[in-house]
Image (cartoon, rainbow, N blue to C red; front, side, top):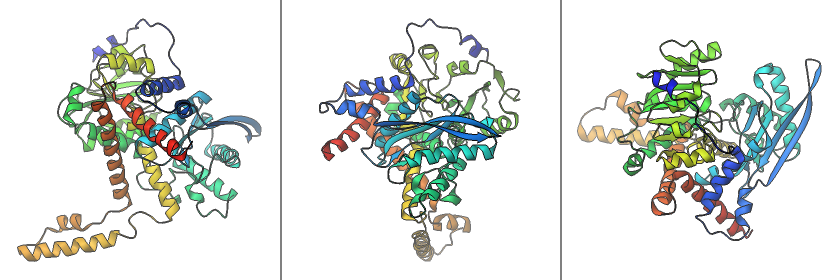
Length: 482
């Protein structure tokens, strides 16, 4: 695989790269140029409505440490505003604002009735014990809740980079203690463990949404041909960057359920390549046991991990941080299809370069929307106080049993027990969550491609997705009389 090393040579660049927030704004402006909105509304839809910064002290091992965090609200055209909380040592306000803006557009695209929000705490979780991290998380949650930035009706966080179901359970418990008479308190946050009011399928929801989005793309022959590809997902060579929650689940589903070949995995300490394919679970287990992928057998190790983004493959799936494909390396990207599983992995400048070369990009504000979609299902479950499938599952099974009995009586033959069980079984919560997510991703993509194929001034799916989102949010404001 010597080709990878030779592809990472430096390219001349001019000017500076846009920040993440500027990239989002420029992509927004690009779509806005294709629309005609009432005066003043475009600026309202662009800027964050509110940003709250907090600094709070926590005593850790006898010493006072001061932590800095943010919660940004981009839009309140629908309530509550929705968006994750990330824990990372490099979190800053511009990043949180950019992610909040993407959340507004993301929710609009998939018809989830939320505004967009995002939170971040500047911390390296690996530097703290679990008990210390719980103390810090609960204090951060209290600071946000006291000022209305956590509430089932106003602002609902979820997991993001550096956080998970454990942290969401801590936040939910903190809010409940502060509001003991709020019957809907569990809905103050999503992504909780199923035993604490969460929902089946939430952990893998974003990765599952990536899979469903790719499946829908490959159902449309014109779109596949546009990317210079043919056929379905089966057999497609995939390089994935990041084996976190999103990358791991998306790659695993694509490998086992769609017969894709994961030929490359990029991580923080390098990359792995195997032309015959890598076992995602085996690599993830090795990473978990050793703290990284270096030394993994049965694959070629590439020390300059980012160079593997430039290797030949059918689908490149950046599922790590923002700004991974820039003006510096965009011209060397060989993948005909980029699936943005992460938020903002392609900068505005890189996006222009890739579009000029005919690269097709499934944009983050669509493909990354599986998490918030299932978060919506969890929020609804918490407000209704009943798990999905509880009232109708047995009824469906009884009806199916009756139908099966009629079929057997009419044919005079018995259905094999294994087939009978599969036929009779009613949908449980996980079945319904997956069905709802699949339907959501299919419908959203069809709306995006309709704009793309029917508007001459639109020449990429990202602009089409922004147009869909902007129109839906603008319509809400106009109908409200704002």
